[in-house]
Image (tube, rainbow, N blue to C red; front, side, top):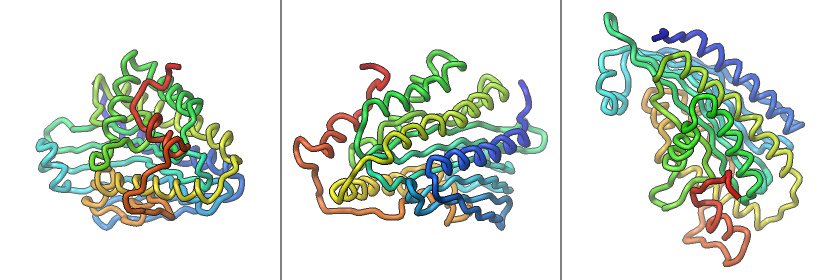
Length: 304
């Protein structure tokens, strides 16, 4: 089995951050990302890049982080007891894009690598990541295009990879306390370390590289759609669900906070404006009701 090449993974992730930022700046057409480099006292650091109040993007962040240390958080070793007593490195690119226009979906992507080492023993390592789409007003063409891009990223690695990672995404991005999905899904995978490092790394790169070409055309197509106060109110309501998921369930958020990561960078994923109304329900037969009745139901988006 090929040995993990930590430097190659880091080089790829830094390049991915550059590439995604460039593509998003082009689709926004006005604002640019501002970079904030930071260091972690316990080891490591990162580059946080944020674009705010653009022509299209209300708030977007594309983060690279590489943290390391001698001891993992207790939650990590409880989940994986074989990690106890090992040094660790965790690196990844994580991004969230919140658009101004409610007809443009919010999107999220993340690709990451983790390795834990101990002298005299084989390293424990894995890849994880994926991408998912959170529309406020659903569009079947967008859903089909998004999932087609996800499938094409996975196809070279096995006929069942897309279906497994798609189902995993549907299961992961589910708000149990609301009994509803966060959006229309995409891909999610974790703990990937078979059949070998080179294959796993290639799969992670394929998914990372697929994100911007999948998302930017949807933004271009929807960014000039007229909207009013009603659509904006609904967008802010649905953003509340996004906040709830990230603060209650998201593994990356929890790991980052528990491992002493930079709080400002970790919570970059939260939207700039959000609204919680008491017991709000959509009007029957409305566009808003259609989101719940059709789009927030896991399904095969490549059919029909």
